[in-house]
Image: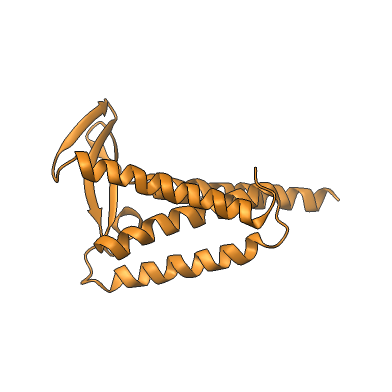
Length: 159
């Protein structure tokens, strides 16, 4: 695990690279409407999401592209400042994953006007909205932030 802000920034950069690389592979191999079976609960698809998580605001006329871009850039700037301060490792990792995922999706919004999603999970005819590596990093980061805050509260009450 990194110990400096630069190390955490590097890890966030790795998340961005993995996200963009996976999207490049998807855009090179999967056509619109094509579904590639992976497992009974998992498909590869190509989906364009102009909104946020779970296609929130995807039906809007376009302002959401710039709103979510600005929001992700603001959150990333805040995370960069936070990572310069001493942080428990779990919290720093969580913030790093959120920043890397947010920046990965910003690249898509700027390049394409929408985020490239491609992982589709389903069970018994129910489909989870398609997502990508950046979304996974953001989700894992959010879970780790909750865990870090619960751990920090426990530590502060144990003193």
